[in-house]
Amino acid sequence: MTVKTPIYLDYAATCPVDQRVVDQMVPFFTQAYGNAASRTHAFGWTAEEAVERAREQVAQTIGAEPKELTFTSGATESNNLAIKGIAEYLHEQGDHVITVVTEHKAVLDTCKHLERQGKRVTYLPVDAQGLVTAQQVADAITDETVLVSVMFANNETGVIQPIAEIGKVCHDRKVLFHTDAVQAFGKVPIDVQAMNIDLLSMSAHKIYGPKGVGGLYVRRRKPRVRLAPQIHGGGHERGNRSGTLNVPAIVGFGAAAEIARQGMGEESVRIAALRNRLRDRLREEVQHVTLNGSEEHVLPGTLNMSFSYIEGESLLMALKDVALSSGSACTSASLEPSYVLRAMGLDDELAHSSLRMTIGRFTTQEEVDYVVELIGKHVTRLRDMSPLWEMVQEGIDLNSIQWTAH
Amino acid sequence: MAYSDKVIDHYENPRNVGSLDKGDESVGTGVVGAPACGDVMKLQIKVEGGVITDAKFKTYGCGSAIASSSLVTEWVKGMKIEDAMEIKNSQIAEELSLPPVKIHCSVLAEDAIKAAIVDYQKKHGGA
Ligand SMILES: Cc1ncc(COP(=O)(O)O)c(C=O)c1O
Ligand code: FES
Image (cartoon, rainbow over all chains, first blue to last red):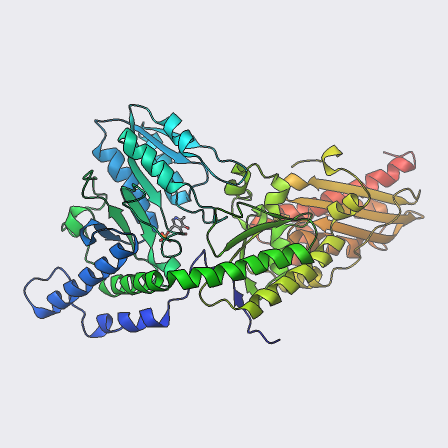
């Protein structure tokens, strides 16, 4: 078996740009380099046409109208624009926003910012699988609530929230519903109509497009959603987001969305099969592994597992030919273990022992098998070195020990 | 993050992994850290005539923690216990070129050797 290293298993962080996408982008750097806002010559018209085609391609992926799409610099900006933009625009209607503890920082920190401005935010807890329920959302809505923001799928665990049910609650209660769909977009079917989504954030680099470009879907009918722009200037993107459009990147975003939409059915089956193989073989090869998240409500390519009694960073160090990530504190600058896993009620010990492995378009079965063997080998080696493993072998209950926390 | 060559060497070829009999009168055992913090170190020394003749460790923690404990077991062998008591985390951190966020891993190794010595001394009616 020959596999080429390094192996990339971190598709939830970012993806290589698909060559087909690059090919479509290239002419817009050197030949069709016009400013999409230039109305007085063909350079501008060509650029504008390309942007409008991309707008259609992206909109189609989520069942939206092209006019409902605002291009941004990525999902961090989209989340900021959606949450701050709605809270600001509807400030006379209410000052309450509902979100979830396991959201991406681009949502959580934006909500913290609103709190500093005197608004109120409810952070809904999740269950052991990382799920919230529509009922939790319904119970949290008050007369003051202007926005509910619940991510479509989690970036660490891949867990998919009951978006259609939450959308229905929001629709019935006449509260706007935003979803950070970065991880789900292009991977699972999304229909903003059927799911009653009013605002939706997406990013090109998670779907084999370029970095630094994304979009925000803003519903135009039933209801017509308006928001306060957060970047002011020349009034681009219907005034929602000023700034000269990054035409090559937008073209790439459109091309990537189109490829994702057309290949989604087949690709998600292939990727889910590889993920399941990785999960099942790791369970066979390694004792004391736990799946973090849900086996049922989950993206096709994401796998998050904890390997008890060894610490995640030391395992990553052993897997130096494999790119993946860990929820361990030792890998984070803050030295705090993953807040997502902790919110699911995981012991700190298990959070420290977690690995996130994400599979994508270019992952092969040989790579999966190679990684299983490598992990199996190094887990054994590191457990032989682990005092916790030794205690467990001796029948000592780790919870019975008085640790010297520091 | 990039690791120093010395950290990688100790991580890939850890010295003195294992356990000594903690019931043995000549053995001192130190266990420091907590699973919830992501690091637990067990360090054991065998003392004969006031001199450390053997040392073993097991560590649950990051690569820098494993390297710190491995290094300390290497250092203390052949040392008098009074001298081993003087080992400072800064020496460990310097030897391994640990970045600032990993300094606490070397602190843990210093705590572990001290705890092992104290345990030995207790067995012999000291400290
Ligand atoms: C769930 C989620 N939201 C938001 C972002 C931020 O997206 P971007 O990198 O486009 O700013 C990411 C990616 O890191 C993500 O996974
Ligand atoms: S043991 Fe956590 S950073 Fe070293």
